[in-house]
Image (tube, rainbow, N blue to C red; front, side, top):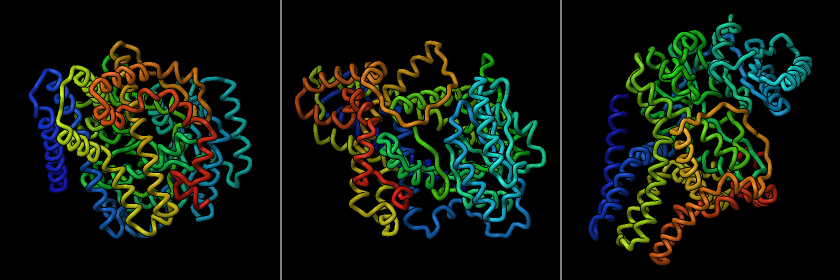
Length: 548
């Protein structure tokens, strides 16, 4: 593993330096100015994350193409029989959720475990943090009917906390402290999670065969959907996450990440090592999962990712407002990690996991600054040679989106995978449409994250609110109220680009084009008619949809 990590960070440094060198060469070709120096500094600040994307994408693609069993190459699960499955608690955390959406996937899981002859090794716990009494009563009523329909009613239990201290992490730890006696493992599921019995049993057997394994985490793909926004988002996310996670597992090994759900945990070490510290001022940690992984690794336990898509899914945000709200919540939680980088007892890789989680969001203001600086330089008449600019821009885009682009390439290069996605033409069309959507979404996201960071800097703290998971349309008024700053910034920047001529405007379009059209994009991608149109033509269809 040290050799793999040395290779990874050497590649990361080389790619980052190469990208910064290309941008510096383009900017300095006709002399330097304050604006160019500031642009280069902002770009250099984003280079480590961009290079990490390229490295994980390249490593993951190589493994996916060359290894006979890519998931097993990075996480070899011993193929040894298990005399008796460890007792496993299926813990589902809910808060103001629609139980009509939560319970059916759990019924399929329990039925699958029963069919495999493993049902008596599992028990289901609904862990509620719902505060509203009426909503809680609806939860209890729904679960009573769910229990009555089960062949083993005593294995299904409901627990609701009076106070949601510590958010989701506090909910889980309260369960482990007071309700997990007699269980060795816990399957962590979110309200929108779904796992097949085969996927769960694979992870449970891995835990049984690896006594130092504390968390076995699987990839999580989006469920089939008719809604346009999640349909487009998950098509690209799935391609990128497969290569990213495979490459990352290659060099992180037993010091891997934890994403908070669709994972099996070993209860004893988790309960002992993962009591989260309070932040300065007494605040609770919002994003618990990476901290828990780092604490376990620091205590000498393994956290591993099985880079397989089979049998593990979730629902993605149904529209742009929910997506941006989720990003803002994750941003607030990840940026809290800056207080934990010196936490005693963490391993070097544990600290890197926290730093990596910070980098995921910390570059957003730099991306926004690069856009504003580029527009200002264009308006001021500062020029960059088109050839050098095109070379730097192309290299940056290829590096930043390497996991996604190589994920699509993997599908196209493998006949069996092409067939699962409906053929090469469908894959290519879906990838093209999704990539245009991603460019627009990322421009909007960079500004939204920058605004969220500004609100945090002003002392406006992010809360833990219930999530809307139901597909819906977004009206023009709602979209305008939310996205008017993005629109105005986009229009102002494009005015600057336009003053430099059509060539400059064309170069800016793929990078910032999402901003001036943020409102119509939000409305359009939430319109059921667009989702139905995409589905009817098989655009951005995933295998589970085509398999029906």
